Amino acid sequence: MVVESNCEIPESLLYYIEGKNTVWAKQESADVILVGITDIAQTMAGKIVKVRIKKKGIKVEKGRPLATMESGKWAGPVPAPVSGEIIDVNAAAEKDPVIINRDPYGQGWLVRMKVSNPEELKQLYTGDQAVQKLKELISSEKLSCKRL
Image (cartoon, rainbow, N blue to C red):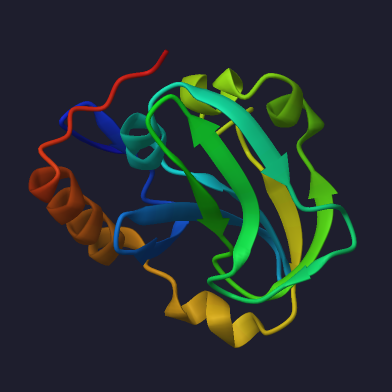
């Protein structure tokens, strides 16, 4: 685990980084991933007050929204890190969205996806490359992460 300006960056995860959108994916099997937003994303959003996650069985394309979130200062989409089908949804995060702020890499996960094109997983940022890219974002946004 790398910590930069209080932001946690687990090196074991895969990252989708597109502008200020930062989403993590944890590979659970060859074609199943768990997806959530990063510590950086939850800090930039502020206290999350509403989450709408697409339903189980919905197919999403890489970069398209798999959920939308609202906070006091932001509302927007959470992009899918890869193309696939949503096979599980975190109902606890929908009921109590602040869980995403408190534990973005644990209880605050959003969806479990069946990956339709495993090649796309290789396009995500990993390890040192992910850490470097996320450190650049933290620096450019002058962030210091905090949990609620």
